[in-house]
Amino acid sequence: MDYATFNGLYTLFLIIIFVALILWAYSKKHKKSFEKIANSIFDEPQDSTTYASNDSKHTGAKK
Image (cartoon, rainbow, N blue to C red):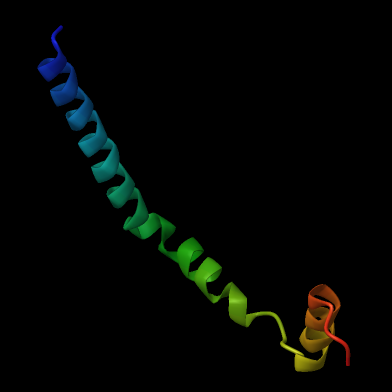
């Protein structure tokens, strides 16, 4: 097998993997789980005082 044939097969292999990944990502079967993951950031209550105190501890800033 020469170098050009190897490059062609490698490119074909990568294209097949890419198409499979796209089909998996856009499949209807995974839509609910992806939406749940995307909206999970809104599930936690945000308390600005808690985050502010944690930020000052890590940065070394004084109150």
